[in-house]
Length: 206
Length: 189
Image 1 (cartoon, rainbow over the protein chains, first blue to last red):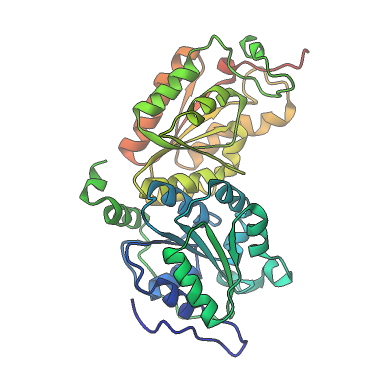
Image 2 (cartoon, rainbow over the protein chains, first blue to last red):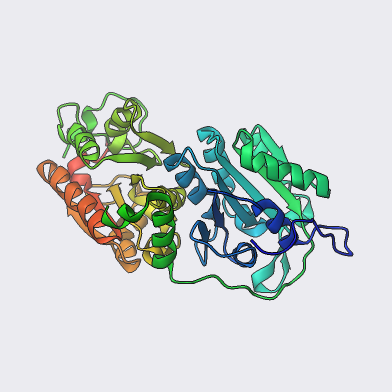
């Protein structure tokens, strides 16, 4: 892990994304982290690339369901999905699927800047009032949160690490564009290193 | 082939295998023999008995999806977490998986799919024909190794080969179970 775990706020009054991710991932232990394509992948990499990170380079709309598959396969580990509002909007059905499955060890955090950041900052529906946390609650998530203050975001970190899931949270973040911090982009390597971290060397003999 | 109409479920638009057909139970035994733990699906009548068997098995987790592409993502996570899975769907669902199959290709994730065909052999419903006719082409365009089973006795050996090919060689694979095996519902026409 690098840097501070203090939540920083921009002039907009909204949290700065990398300070949020740094705080959520502080002292993460054995937690597995899946990041949706684009900025969330750069954010978890900026916080410190490691074998228990799965930064996605594609498959828009896949992050939450990858998290579900991991959480079911590894019920003793915490699984955290960090993704953006555009990526989550592409997988609204997954909210229903995950709520029905009720994985106690899964948390999904949406970093909501109300824009498609990788394609020129076009607005997403969340800037027009679409409430992802409300949708998650309606799907059946018992914990559907909208933390806004530093204290609420730190409380979310605690819930992600020790609380009963599934947890869904939307954090409104500043629509800043930050320097790229790119993870490895060879998918077979990313998969193999994560499997080895979870399963040991036997992962490669399956 | 009229076997499919033996299924007693009224109002069902798709054909289910006849009660006398052995391959659905044999498919279940095959999934068990491969230690399949996560069964992702959007239901199809052709898989109805297999789905019931999986739901009744304590060691299997049946994950009902809202759209088939969720299954590609789910099985990616399952494999990374050390569990084997399989995706059951109808041929129309293959169209929903196209971009998501990128995940299996770039990560080299075993991704076996068992697809019951519509729009394939004696179809009644015009809406099933475009995707049914394109199913194999679309899967192959996305790097999936596809085998067909068009006789009941071919279903289990072909599915076995598909599952082995996925987990032994790390890629998306599919068995297409032909409508000739399932029977085409004709709504009495």
